Length: 198
Image (cartoon, rainbow, N blue to C red; front, side, top):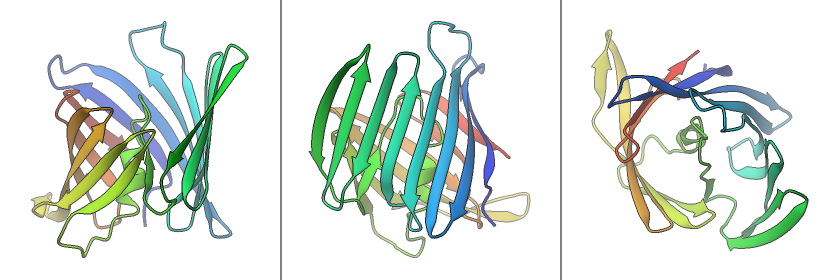
């Protein structure tokens, strides 16, 4: 059974120091999923704590996302064929519309350590080819299955996840257990190892 609460801890592959963590919980009721998270950056008091509430359907397709940090907030509504994002900062609001179907939409958030879990829960583990998603606000995501590895006598699936956002590319190596939990992932450009502690 997949984990319903825990935290993802990010460690720098250069300094080996912990740099941030996300506490999260998953609640599934009545065919809907609600994921709540709190993101904390370590060693930098100027970065505010970030609170996220994400509403999804039973297939983990996004419906509504609410992000709050200090005096800023972001509200994203995922309609069947588009996403509408409202950004409020110091009482000034701006709206943006992005063409992306709810089934393919994937929101990328700076500091959202647990967010790749949203991709993992939507993957078809039997697929042998690439699976593609539309990144909100602007970009693309492609996930390709890698080899099955073994740790402590248990098989783990691996996936290569290529993110292209605003002209910048990153490559994540995802490691997933048989329960569908994202147990860890590594980012190439950011130089982070992010580990699940449940």
